[in-house]
Length: 294
Ligand SMILES: Nc1ncnc2c1ncn2[C@@H]1O[C@H](COP(=O)(O)OP(=O)(O)OP(=O)(O)O)[C@@H](O)[C@H]1O
Ligand SMILES: [Mg+2]
Image 1 (cartoon, rainbow, N blue to C red):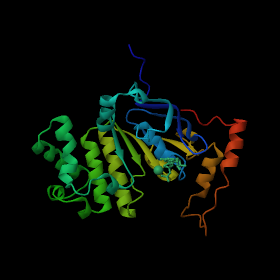
Image 2 (image 1 turned 135 degrees about the vertical axis):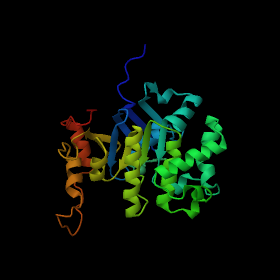
Image 3 (image 1 turned 90 degrees about the vertical axis):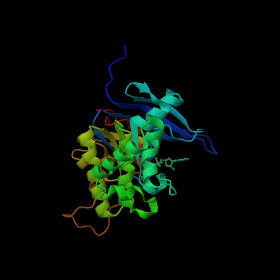
């Protein structure tokens, strides 16, 4: 019998090394992350900290010359050891990915209906008529009005917000159990941002989906996720349910202090004092016990 499955996704001691002219460069260093079924976890950190790399490592979408170490278990199965068929199922069915820029992930020469129904028809053997019916229902669920008409349009005829909804609908059509959303609203205008975030939260709740939500915004992370993991220079420096209210790590504290607030007028956002030197010194003393999975 298999050991009991403690969470839907368990990442342990994940390392990623990229080849470079002066030897391998460590991009992810000992990342631990666990997401329970139906749980929402945020991955927060500044640009270049390794958030997207973490999701790409989970999906096994890194360039083949990258070396990946550690373990990524999905529902008890080791992703790093999956064969082609398992991997296809994992990527196409178990996990859904939502990206920052929907336009980069939708073929511009295909109509919306082709984009939405192709996977259902080819991999699930669903008839074209039924696939279209499901697509129309899902588009309505994610707030796309006049869905029948939208199906006949091309991506360039849709706004960014609308296209992101189409992408979310396409992900939901596969009925995944886990969503990986990599800054899904960053490329959208402000009103579309809150609409799309609300749709993700609503669909997640209705379908009991687990979510890994990647963002720069600690406040947004706290508002929509049960736990937050904070990343700096390829490492998770702190994670837990209380990160945004009672941060233990100096980097998280600075992130919280630096955020703009309506009751605190600032002429200029403070520059974070925390840097690579502080980080390395802190790690050397090993004084903090904030990294492990809660
Ligand atoms: N294909 C690659 N080859 C070499 N280095 C890479 C590659 N992809 C990413 N990196 C490096 O890995 C680090 C983490 O990149 P990543 O894209 O994960 O950052 P991020 O946290 O998602 O940042 P952002 O918030 O800007 O999206 C960066 O230093 C980046 O330069
Ligand atoms: Mg990124």
